[in-house]
Image 1 (cartoon, rainbow, N blue to C red):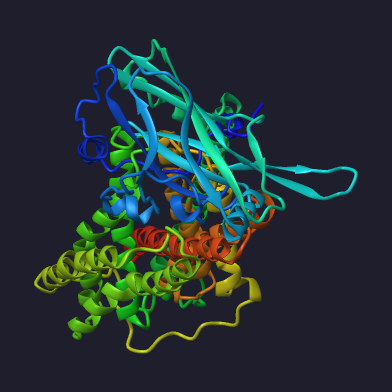
Image 2: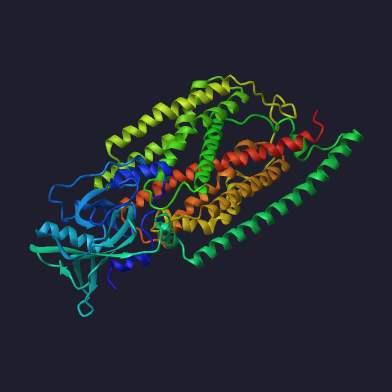
Length: 599
């Protein structure tokens, strides 16, 4: 079997989702020149080349004509890309292939090229690194390999062969294109191991056949390739395992906490009724300190605001996915959704941050708004600047053009920042107050010496482990989609896992907060946030395992992109889950102190 034929067995290359049906239809119209995808026999449908790159490094992609391929006689033309497509590294350009609707071709000459030494060096390096190409025909993706490597057993050396003939198998249903596949002819190759110059003829064949698949279901095969049936069973096993974990955890915590709290309430009530002087121990006697505002309240407020914004953005993306807005290979949709939704939800971060800052008695509102604005965007800018510089050095399509960078800056300046300011103004003018169930004393209570496992770092490790274990199995498939060659389409399972993650994070943070208060440590504000967000640290640790054990990625560029952008995502998880953990702990602390008599 040829190398090109094997591509479908490797399932799908790249994960690119849709922003929406309207944006997808617009993209298709611009790409194809036909809004309804209906053609007559003999109509020329343009075959666009997208990019080339090493198979094991999905992010390391280059423009198609960086390699000495045949170019159109009338000059190449680049398709205008949408924001999400550019962020994905797509650079669609015309090719000299003439694939007319329902017109078969046999051994059509594409071009004849005289390749020089530097051309052969490029091709040898590309074949050695297992380069693939991606094309789009009527908005259907197709992939193939540019060559193959053969090992000579006797000498232990390698020979590099360039494919010079490609065969396109296409299917149609009435007047619509349904499917496209490309394969290479293993008998029509050129040995490029040693020559410095050579004349090479490139050719292609086209074969059309009728299909019973309807146009509305032509993308289903890409979804089928994303996960095999046994993988789907593993998905559901993961869900069941996570649900059992959640039930056991919540049941255990509920039983223990209810029993302990009941005993505490009985003890404290008896002490109050007897009116005797008792030795002050336990969480009740922290009532004068437990609602003391945390240090660095401005930073705490901003982190709570950004965490709430990211949680809202995640819920919006899940909503779009569950109603069927996203579908495979409507390029750049997910990234476009993230950029737009982050900008539109900026008011949430400004408002939530402002509410906390006002409750804490803050007065420097400009500082609060600015900190809320740069808390997430600042690290993203630093990481992006470094990675974009690396991509420019490599001349990769992952490098964003100057125009796209200007558009992103304008989105931030005209939408994100103003909405954050408006949210802060709304919070400043609100009448919210922090009504604590207990009065806070003037001077903080001394904290008794605590064992090492009661300190912040061990508590964070304990808090992050359980939520991480609930999502561990699903993480592999997510990474295989983002940093591999699968397409993730089972959003319902992902949403269930996300809800489980939120629930487990909330419960484990509440439990640790109670244990902290029980040993008379009233510094629970920051601790609950750090414990809730610690799952993000575990996820980043998983990145190292996935990179070195489960993937074949290599090279400075791919490594930089993998760990750089994963650091940004894990930071977002830290802020989001940290805000969830604190809010759960706040509800719990308010409830238990409202149930006792505070002097």
